[in-house]
Image (tube, rainbow, N blue to C red; front, side, top):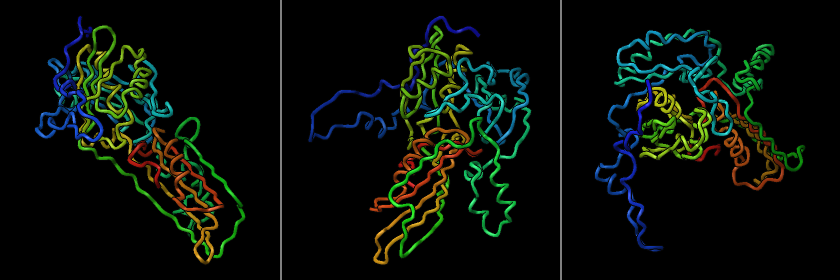
Length: 389
């Protein structure tokens, strides 16, 4: 379908309702620009965005945590009445990779899916339910592989949970995990050494600790509106945490310069780190540019859990050595962070966990190894105070 001859008007619910007027100064009590709107229920969140003649976008996601894609058949889905587009990975116009710190995550999986919920194809239709039903008609032939779900297994390190009363040959099996990424399963290793590695203490306490994966669970799910400008560019209205970082990644995926990809911050319904990574951003823009129509995408709660990063699960082993009167002599710590299928903020989280993982204590002798690993779990990234294990 050809693009419209002229750019559509600004969508309903787009920013412009807030005042930037500054009154008073230090010591005054200025009114929040969005305060009255939120109290009265008039504030527009990103899911409230609307344009006449817009289409609805939906993402097909993998039901498997680790599998090879043999084939994708879109014929039945594309023939569904009301469907305007069905786009698999070969329709990504630019580079089919993006990422917050490392560009390692496909916009749409082309050959391999690395976690349950990974995006495989896109659908645009004139009604959200038609789009959802059409997505179910996309036939993907998967060769299912055994997933790697423990960071220690992924790195080939002995799994503490399986070392007790485990035959030696079984321990060795845990060291031969599949290579999830071509360059290996290690995202980052932070090694810290200080003082005497052979320091001894009167009292030694060793413990193993676990932190589970957490979701930010913000109230407003991922949503946005992508509007083609009729000149090969696109305007994206989206709830996010940093527009310029998003723009850089979107431009790479679309193969467009920054002046053709314009982002406007829409009403944010909570974030807590979960909106630092892309979600529907590139998908909505791809569908808008392909159909020539505005595309609205809104995740439901289930898809939201798949569609953004989570807090890193962590497995930790600490050994504290102290004098009998309670003064720390040394600390030895090994920390494994499960980064999931793609890096996201894992390099930064490893840095925080490794440098702050000993707490606010004075200790002269330190040995810390903090690892961030790829697994076939959902990607993990920023969440409030990330790395504070």
